[in-house]
Length: 117
Image 1: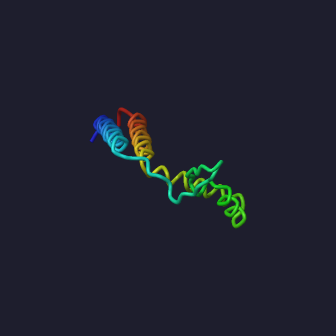
Image 2 (image 1 turned 90 degrees about the vertical axis):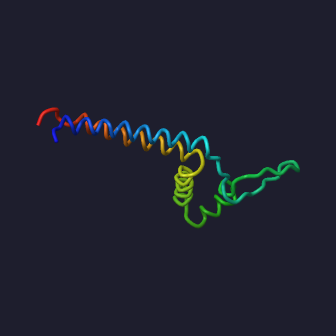
Image 3 (image 1 turned 60 degrees about the vertical axis):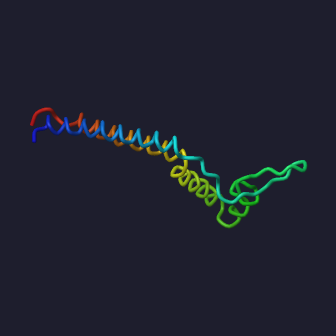
């Protein structure tokens, strides 16, 4: 197989990856709902209770910092952010970004190949 044929196949693969990834992301975004965070705490202000995610309360953060220090708080926040990328509508955005990056990598690799052997 010549380099020209290989480049043509890589460009085709780039288009397929991009099209399938973006269509999948659009379907996921349309069908997915934002899932609520786990465990809820309530904060009462002037007799009105407001729901609040447990991991954002001062008590939770203080306890976590007492046991593991500031690094533990940072790692907990990073872990929650990374886990949120794989749920609900954020999953659609993650799929779109990953498919775009994979298509760009295929495109750049095909561009990098020389035209002649």
